[in-house]
Image (cartoon, rainbow, N blue to C red; front, top):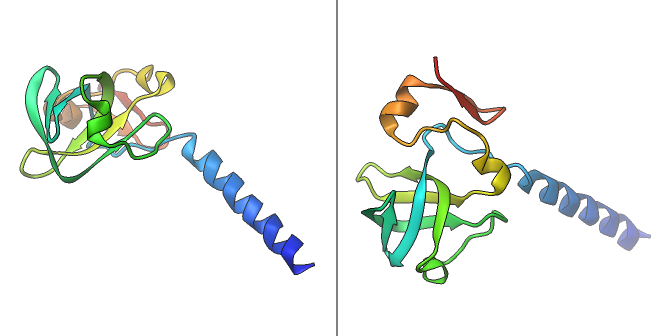
Length: 126
């Protein structure tokens, strides 16, 4: 009896976890760009040299963590954040639905001048 009860609640928790991952929430500091791992930790961000921070996280389209070495030589459209030293901190490889949300700022100056709706995950130009 208790096993059935525990199994039922475990399945509910798993189902709620899967649905929560279907819509990712990006921080308002996330910028959009192109990303390519040259040789970790060296990357190309918008075709210019950049570097991954220590402890940087790269999330795939399935929101699972990806190893930078497994992405070497591939180009992706991403959202990313940078740390205070200018190193890449978090990188999210975009799905087709996420990439379709436009406009999205490519620079910090654009992000400061635009308005972000964190619930709808959209930017608007004033």
